Image 1: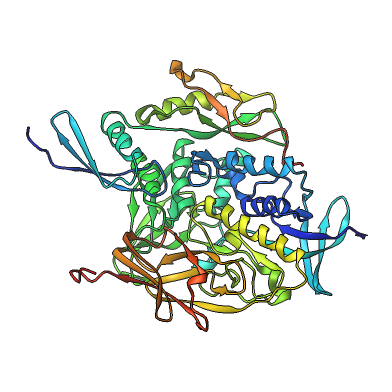
Image 2: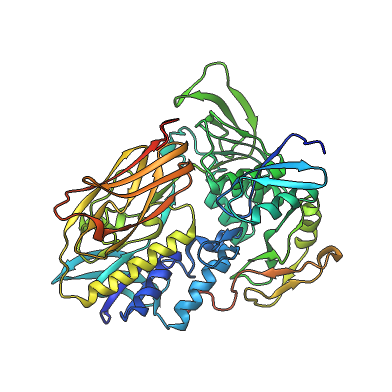
Amino acid sequence: MKETKPIRMVCISCPQGCALEIVKNGGEFGVEGNRCKKGIEYARQEITNPVRSITTTVRTAFRDFPRLSVKTDAEVPLADIFAFMREINAVEVRERLVPGNVVKENLLGSGINLVATCDMKGQGMI
Amino acid sequence: MTAKQDWDVIVIGGGPAGLASAVSAHDAGARVCVVEREERLGGILKQCIHDGFGLVRFKEKLTGPEYAFRFIEMARERKIPVYLNSFLTDISRENGSYRLALVNREDGVVLTGGKSIVMAMGCRERTSRQIFIHGTRPAGVMTAGLAQYYINIQGLMPTKRCVILGSGDIGLIMARRLTLEGASVEGVYEILPEPSGLTRNIVQCLEDYNIPLHLNTSVVKVHGNRRVEGVTVCGMKDFKPVPGTERYIECDALILSVGLIPENDILDPLAVDIDPRTKGPLVDQDLMTMREGIFSCGNALHVNDLVDFVSESGDTAGRQAAAYAAESGRSRALIPVKPEGNIMYVVPQFLNLAGNSEAVVYFRSGRTIRNARLSVRAGETELIKKKYRVVKPPEMERITLDLTKIPAGTGSVVIELKEEAGDEGN
């Protein structure tokens, strides 16, 4: 099989940011430069369908806590991020949530949920 | 004015460093409390809603608020008292312990005391005045952290179209955040020939959204009176503008991500020695400053790139502050750690040979070096020899030293980082 020119990319799985070199050999990917196995999975995903998790905020009904930080519970296709953002920005939270609570289920019919990442109840009191 | 009970350990700051140190001081048996100036715990993590925190400590990718939540829960489980909305206004030494004056809305002035104090105040962003952007003061010139606060905490959009100056991580994160919320980020400008943020943030914050990064370029003029109307950028060489390369950009905001400085002003009355390189106190491996009983950790000690290491230093400072409070006095045999070669800075700056025998040492390289060699020596004895494929200033390195290997009578420990000579083969 013919070897193609290596593709270079930086793994964003963790702050180490390994510089990857991917050689496509027929249907197989050869990955070099990764310091852990996450790099191989990242390279494969990045070449076939790049995905990212979304972290953002949503409006709340509470004046003392106007914005709740949220995240998607799985990564979404990079190309669809702005479509997801439009749906997320229509959400308003009307109860006090804690990290892990689902804010909105099944975003854009993807099966991916929006979950709270901040504690609106404890408010830092101990 | 009220006088409150005394503590073994008082922690100043309820962010990730302070919370970690309070938890570890408590677990070491100390009576500990936390002083926090805001109305909620968590420090800057409250507004750092992006993920990537906790990979080292929890082996999970957490957002900032989730990471903070874990430590807030730990403090809650231990019922560690917290003074919220409380400012530390004065600190003084009295009969071998420290007297603190706090101010808050409920109690007015609170006088309290502690045998040891953990300084975990974090850091502040460098402002436009500190990078010599002078002239009128139109609205719209702000630090990246302030833009982050507006958007993530208050839900306000501070700009429609902006320029970001500086390629620090917060600036890169904000480039993405602003773009996601519908603003247009014209570009990120960096005066240096290489970006100062992590490579992964260049990729996932700029390249993903086609935001250009202009190296060797800076903002030389801000236009506008009431509101920013535009900026002039210019090519730079050795911090000087290159004539003829000016370009005007229309925008309504200039967002600055031009560095962080440890916040230690409150230590002034105690005249704690500060390292001019880190802007944090000089410490030994137990994170005790040159003032007995005063400990420092997190971004107040030196600016970290990962919160995981902020917490790690908090653990150490809390545990050691508890140990110090339980002792009647501490004998110290300090020897300096001397950086050589391409080391930008090293923490701790001293080793206490009468202290803990294991020392965690953090350092940064002064420049990007491929195939770097680290050597840590005590006189003729080499304590550590290590090779790095690449070291970069934005990426902090961490090593541990076994102090029992330091020969008696050694006057200092040298930490040297050099470029590996090509084909020496050693």
